[in-house]
Image (cartoon, rainbow, N blue to C red):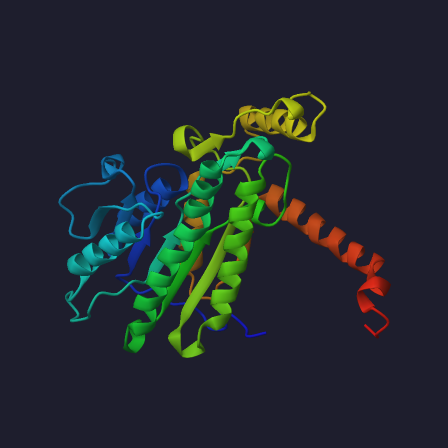
Length: 306
């Protein structure tokens, strides 16, 4: 397979960052951190730009834009506005994009059998198709850049949910698993000379305001209501963990890790499980998978040598 991220990534001193989903949580923390760095330039986006009021006005290095990742026209408009604002800058370069963080998304949980067509499509549009369309628009810009500014770094926000699947979150897992496969495939398409790097950020539970559109529930289904159902057991466990805060990651820590990866001048990992919970559960899942492969080796071989 074509290797990925084989060269060290060098963050430019006056890099342009585009971040989706900046209204709250991880996106807000990343945007705030970049905005605090005098030489870095920020394109902060949200479906409702009024939610970006925490960022200062009147700073030429900060551009606040409306962006709905589920809308092609909205993505087109945001990239056009960014090009107009940051194009032909002081070093004579046309619009460039150095770092993109695809953070927009929300969790859909509950009884999968009760999910509506609208629930399903909106979740996949936001988690997967939104990430895919912003990623490919960014790749188009990054590969066309010239000289030592050619290339860039794309962070796609995945999750423990993109590595392991749990009951009651089927379409959230579907979206995150899709982001994982899409990102790995696209990363392997890049020519080394393009200098385009990818990183999947895979946190476990994060201390964010999971309310409103950030966490949506399907309607309860009576067939799954009993307390001994797997989804109900997991809900109780997760709610207890959220209340106690044990194992939960601060969104500021995720933001700082992303900036560290971008700025440390080393090769970028394709995948980064964040937090002890994610690292342990993901490792356990893949170790179990290897054992399961061994158990079906004869069937897999179909009479041939493995």
